[in-house]
Length: 81
Image 1: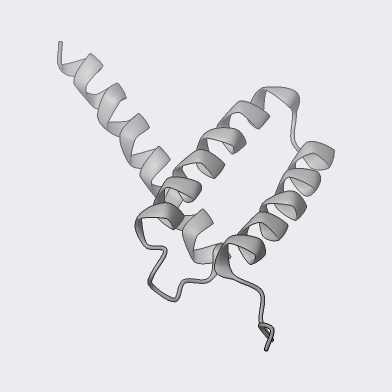
Image 2 (image 1 turned 90 degrees about the vertical axis):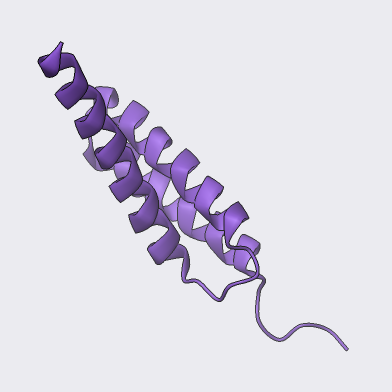
């Protein structure tokens, strides 16, 4: 018997394709590097939690939050020095 629902990885990849397409149409080129960082973080989260049921959007949002946190932490440390 085949699967009736796509795997999380397949659903995630499809969502990322749509996300990149929309971002490339509506965001300035310089923002695409940030988008790619968010996608890398989301993929890292997806790989860490592969066994957990997670919506691709949740992984993408967590990736964005982690990217923001790291950036804020870096900027804060630079200001303290």
